[in-house]
Image (tube, rainbow, N blue to C red; front, side, top):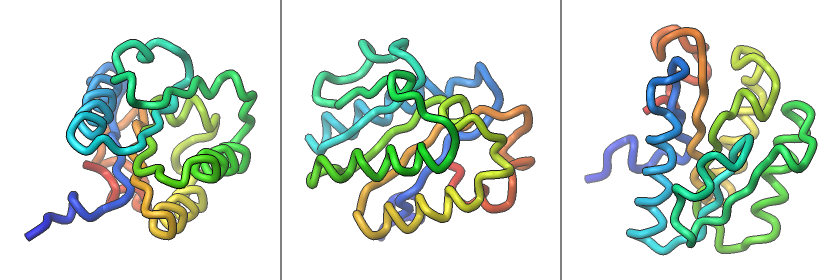
Length: 146
């Protein structure tokens, strides 16, 4: 029997800065790459975690692509899958710094992520820094929090 976490295609690590979200998302990506040898992409705001990742994981420093907001980031994510038909998972660290919008304003973006991940069968694991706890997260994101 599979748990809800096993079948959920979008997973969000949510919490305050300094609570270990980056270390956890790096560990999740490395674990998936080693266990399944699947095609994984790790997106970050800089190169700080690049050398912590398995060499089998494609690393993208999103700062190099001048992303300005949720629509551009959504297109960026769609483009990643377009060039890799075997893509299994996308790990996004420092999500709020990449999107440059408050999490409470991103409900339509998460709706897009849900359609995208469901249609393409690509898991999205997203690290979201916030001022509050997971209990204080916007309602639309609570179901994705692990």
